[in-house]
Image 1 (cartoon, rainbow, N blue to C red):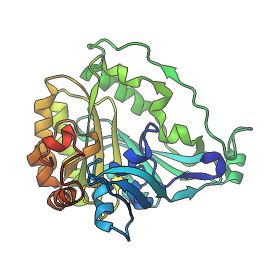
Image 2: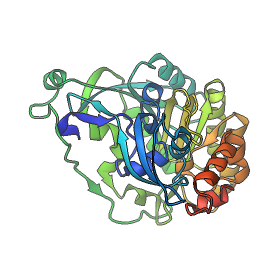
Image 3: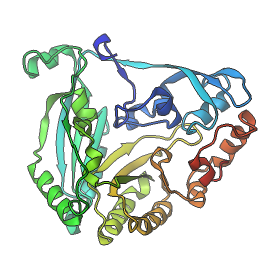
Length: 358
């Protein structure tokens, strides 16, 4: 769609996502504080229900089904087709600014001071301690017009075009000893030191801005043969700073560093019953998968709940029913609608059964 002058209104952190999956997870992007979630740009859905009925639903028609489906993890029926609103663009480039923050408080302050930026995201050092805890590199982005891209970029790299991604491949699983708190701390320190403040916008292609990891194919192999588990949480504005600090301290004390940690600002919550974002911040932590990780995650669950937060269903692999029900206040209404539209429970998953949704 880029060569035709269009872009997704909300772009998630991976390009390997289906339209149905984006709707069912009500995914967010780096612009949630501006544009909300993917579901907020869906005009209508054609769905096959568990009753065998095919219906069209939208925010105006069968609105209860619509708000249960966007973020409903595929439990309300099969999405046959969707009509979505795209974003018009003039260039394949994003104008990027880079801001370094020396602690988590400074990172949150940088987000607030740049809340008018269309896109914002921060890499965060989850292993830094003391006064440097949560030091971050904040990236801000704007779509640029064709003239600005032509003036600021290299010849032949302007206009509207699909980006041909150059990929490096990780051909084997890294040895299990390679990724530990010492190597991660070293990498984080080096990465932070190498970053420079670039408050003057620099044009980069959209693929590099939105999907930097995907230029390293099979990057998950860096975590070893067992892979990794991503733990993503959202915290409300009023408790975000304290909550993030507590979570980073807990993970650091347990010796479980996250190779990739990402912080984003969230805008207001929407009307979708199981949508993840709440106004405040979201933190995503990638942990190497190992048995000793799970006691830590139980502690993190408690911290998230104590600070009024919740976990992301699309990234969940082990949340308890109690944690889910305590953090998703509209789960009972969702369960009622699921029973209404799929009374025989045709649409189910391991996750839905674990969370007590049937």
